[in-house]
Length: 242
Image: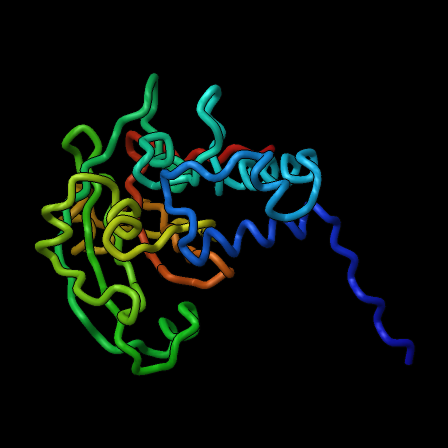
């Protein structure tokens, strides 16, 4: 059997890998400027064009943000423009409505088989479970149940969630040093059970969107498993395909 040939990685991809390591190690923090293309070219011993190509790809993946006349910055969940990157529910009609998060519960538990599989941890490991309601224009629209690895989220409490003014992901970034890089979602239609109907102020049995999300940080490590139920009476799920 012929051995597999080594995989060739273009030079700019190698530079991208080194820059990703700098992000993951915390050398460059969210919201901070990274060194200039000239400085990075000198650091890595490559041309500015090679560095620029690596930065272009990282900007396209929402890891970095170019700001005209200011430089290139590490993307941050504290940037208001980042809110609707992961939240795809928009109201019918004109304009976006910014949601208000209402934490309902937060408790510690032990990971069951499904949570351990999804989050790549051992069964019985500690996890944090959060239930929260999202309101749009004071109307309940989404109820989420969120599972988080307890090792990362030590100290997360309901009071912390209630006191926080920004998005949930900005809290994770600011308090726990965790940046969400990408997510996978599975969507299906379900009927509202009585408990969910009461929370969302809809009739039992009405159709809801069930959105299951697994979110990953650097190194493709799963750090959040979220199961949400969405009322679409006045909203719809928007996904842009390029």
